[in-house]
Length: 379
Image (cartoon, rainbow, N blue to C red; front, side, top):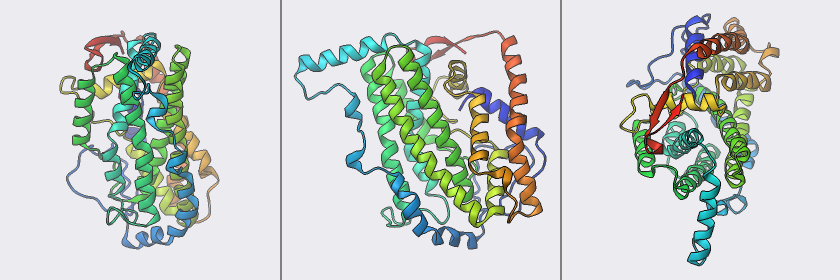
């Protein structure tokens, strides 16, 4: 998500030791271009049967992590009630605006970036539906994999909806520019390098849901520190959803490590080598050609999502999946892949320290953001 995180990962990919795989197309060279025309199917057909055999497991292990609709919060739970008499509704809006008046412009830049990322949800459902063996074949399939994807999407849909309405009522942002950015982003799509392969796809979502949990958790903390307790609850509630979703995707990889340790470890190494491309990396507003980099730099500076967070997520997943202790079922190639992934956090921290030293020496600069009526913030 953040510029410094992306730079750190690029350095790692250029300096990493080879971990090749014909099955997963792991490459020792730099990450491939973000946009590719050729469809890549890197999972052998027999691996599709692994996911079909896991349908019963998915029903028992994943679907319970979803909440029934009647138990879910809804955006209106946090927003002024438009059904009340006009005077009461206007008073609630004035109270919301009074709270948000204490929030600085750079906070709104990262909150808008989070909202835009969440609003590009159609792209993410489409991406998951490209994965062989787990896609929703009919659009209303009863397969537990399809049920998971649709219901996960339904839960996620509330996030951008809530943030967008909160931002609209705040009066602090140019909603038309936000809406244009969302339209640009959905139109641009994304290519996270998952190659229609659910091994790769679920490594990606495990990391990405953890990243959004961290990011929304930090926006909640900052809102609370600056006096908007309602916005803190908004961001905290979104973070809690992301935590549940992260747990589900991480469970899938845990199961694959149990059933196919070599294939799963090679997939983890593949995605770590490519770097985890953040879902909004193609965001555009029609004005700033480096919008994502500038937004990421603000998030890094505020501590919403940083290079250190990226490293910590890798470290967290290595520990959760107990990769350092894995031996059984690994080929020589699998062991090399395991060692590569387990060694990443230490190497990332060394590169991070160098990047931080360079950042301290660099002159801060101001950049205009169309989202906040072309006001400038420091990056």
